[in-house]
Amino acid sequence: MTELTDLSLSEASDLLGAGEISSLELVEANLRAIDKTEPVVQAYAKVLADEARAAAKRADAEIAAGDRRGPLHGIPIGIKDNIYTKGIVTESGSQVMAGFLPDHDATCVANLKQAGAVIIGKLRCHEFALGSNEPPTRSPWNLDCYPGGSSIGSGAAVTSRSSFGALGTDTGGSIRVPSSINNLVGMKASFGRVSIYGVVPVAWSLDHVGPMTRKVRDNALLLAGMAGPDPKDPTSAKQPVPDFCAALEAGVAGLRIGVERDYFFYDGLQDEIRASVEAVIAEYQQLGAEIIEISLPELEITQDALFTIVLAECSTYHRKLIRQHSEKYDPASRVMLQLGQLVPANHYLAAQQARSLYRTAINNAFCEQRLDAMLWPTMPIATAPLDQIFEFRADGYPETPVSSMCHHTFNANLAGLPALSVPCGITSDGLPFGFQLTGRAFDEAMIYRIAYAYEREHDWHRRKAEVIEDL
Figure 1 (cartoon, rainbow, N blue to C red):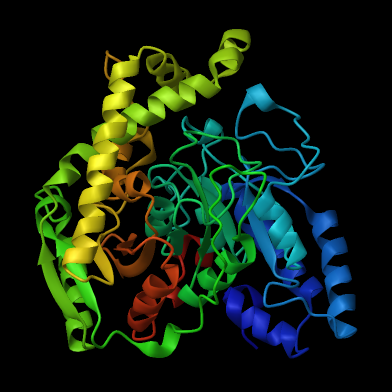
Figure 2: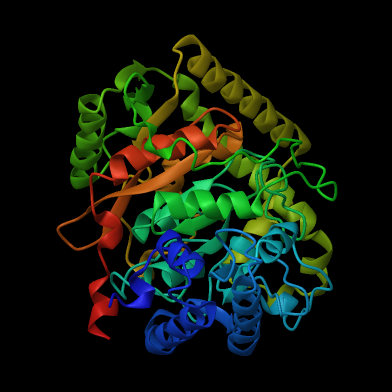
């Protein structure tokens, strides 16, 4: 029989619904994987073994009684440590929040619990989703390499087979970057699609919560379980949650996919990634999609605009905490927050104007070219050595591969559009990478459809990290 942890979320869900396996069996399989991988990977801030077993037993009893709530009922899911979980320590990777016990769940967690999901543990993240994490989470694909941040534990847990899916957060790429690095599917949905109530903010006008999984269908199911309007969140959109899986099998014949080459296929793009993404584009053409070459010169302003907004908004949120507990912050976090206090109001407003300019430009491109999606690499490189992460110049600006990693992802946060990273290759050094699809606002179903047309022709989601295989 297939090892339970090798099942995807949707495969496990189908077997649960058919009564062929139990939720408790899935939880025990994940806990065995945690025991095996955690000593080297360090993805979990807290493993909720007893709580998960109890929730799984309740789910099994409900399902046996004919009260199955849906496809997530009984499925173990990991939650990033900056997302509130009622009565369960939530520290956001920081000594500043050591021992903090929320008195409520984040709305996305409450929605998942209502859908019957089982919380298997809290997953490590960079301090407040912007500094570093200690002890360092390591890449299951190469223990000396960076596994992607700030949803660092979420990516490592899913690729280590110690969780069937995970929630991450994304302010400038922190779902899509670790998904690309870990051979996963990662969705940053439209701004407002998923409530950010109960999520420790980085930058409230850019923050998103989203799912990280091994397959496209898994991701669509997990997004559906966590999304929806929320009166507690002023940024939440009053948009109904559709069936994201309804059109997965429809293919791409007749769809129009935009490709912008000047910004995304520049000289810093790793050759193996370039070749693989060009092959993805050619494959979509063979499948009947029309590839439209587009130009978006406004992309050049996105990185500076986003970084300015992040600095200003995150330093505003932390202004009291950092005065009271400066010594508890990691140096990498502290330098960003202190730098943010120096951002003049006119710079912040200029960044917001640049954001509006870019949002108008990309939305116009979708309309004028009648595009169904845009496609480019998720990252220009596969990853970087751990010892090169979080270096800073004398002026405090990050001098680190992380800024390069996010070069391709910032723009979707600024525009508030849905963006999905999909696995599409593994380098000669054994490091995974992906391509990224960006869609129209609240049309996540379309980019899932396009992604699935590629995924069903390949087996990237079946590939396992050799480090995990060897344990």
